[in-house]
Every structure is written in C-alpha cells, then in structure tokens.
Image (spheres, one colour):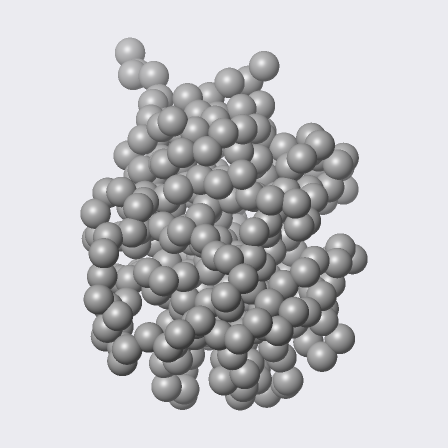
Length: 321
C-alpha cells in the first residue's frame, strides 16, 4: 500500500528586480505584498512603462543580488558588477539566500559584505550612502504606481546591457501603492511589481509532468526545461501532478496563503534564461494540455493572509474547500 503524499516546501526563489534573474533562498519573510525583497525594483522606459522580458529578453541574462542595507549588486555578461544603493524612501527586508542561516532576519554585516545569492558571493567596496530621491510614476499594465529612481549609474548599466535607454526604479512601501485586480482579490490586497499577485507557487510533480508531455510533442528537442522558465516564488514537492488546481488555501509553516487563480503563461516561459533565445515550448504543450478559460496555465497565484517566515522543508497543509 502506497504512503500518502506529504507536501513540503521544496524551494524558494526571490527576484529583486522584475524580469531579472534572482536567487534561491533557504527562508524568507512573507509580507502582505509578497516575499520580502521580491520584485520591489523594475526597469522602465522613457515613458515610465515597466520593461519586462516580454519585449526585452536580454533581461534574462542579468542577475540581481540583495545587499543587507536594501541595495543590490547587479551582474550581466560583459559588464562589471555594479552596486546600487536603495533610494532613501523606505525599503524592505530581504530573504536569506541558500547557504545562509535559516532565518529571514538579516545578520549584522560589515559594509564590504554582500548577501550570498544563488551560491555566488560578491565582495564589494564600501557601500555608498542612500541614493538621492527622484520620484517617478511607473505604468505597470495600466496601473500607475509611485516609485523612486535609482542612481543614474544603474540606469546606464542596464541601458548598456539592453541596448536601449531604460531607468531603474524602486517601490518603497507597497502597503497601498498597487492594488491586486479586484476580480481575483479582496479589498486591501496589494502587490509590488509582480505581474498580478504577490506570489506564484508551482509543484515539482506538475513541472515533471509538463516536461514529460513536452517529450512526446513536436518540439521535444527543446526539453526538458528548467524550473527558472516559470520564475516561481514557492516550489512545492510531495503532491500529485496538477493537484494545485483544487487548492483553495495552503499553509506553509506559519503563513497561510489564499489561492487566487491559475497563472496564465506568456512568452517569457519560452525564453532561455541562460541565452535569452526563444523557442516554442512550453506554450505549445500548454496549449494542448493546460488551457483553462482560454488561457495557458501553469502554477497558481497566491495572496498571503498573514505574515511570517517560511523555510525550505516546511510542511505544506492544503485546503480544498
């Protein structure tokens, strides 16, 4: 007789800059608008519109690591790493990258110490004081959000990487800045610069099932795909494939999340996060097997119902009603 499955939190990922590579964490603080430090920064074009991998796939080649003072270290091929100070208008705690202590509270660190993200440590010169504040209005999918521009060097750095003029902006306190779509939320739900909801969860079993389906299709040579194509925050193991379709709430450690809606997938999932090249998958396979209400879906969007800390290895309790 087979043993019942026990869902557990398998992995955590934090993406400090929207559409830019992030880091794997052992633990994270959950705030009302998502994981601490997740997608609090975004690039914008000259009109103030948020820039993503949809129109700029080379963003996949850049990577952002958090500093303990709320700033960032940026990396991209062909460019020197750049330290970016957080604008002076507020900030957020950051998650503890993998290999660090199993607490989401930052440890005291000297000014020459960068947080170790995704297994890479960066030793930096003494951090600069907080950047001067320059307010800007960011247009993210039609919603206008107040933000603060980072130092001009950061904007120049990203502009060189992308080959077009962009600016780097930071959202201070998201408590009331950007409401979640009321069709899939409750009054007071807010989000930082994520596409629509505070967090995204996927399961290992559904990911494996999708890769198996791809292997039977016309573009099998593109697979198997890595998990980073889907840019999740929470990865859950110990479930049956597609079990998340029935979830209504989940509790991870001390935090309960409301399951808001399936995640509709876009062209970013076809973008190789290591080369910025694009293929046909996984959208071709999702179109055949995972079309719900006209959208190609993989994963579920979440809204926290309380705050707290989640850790890799936490048991995940599932509620289906």
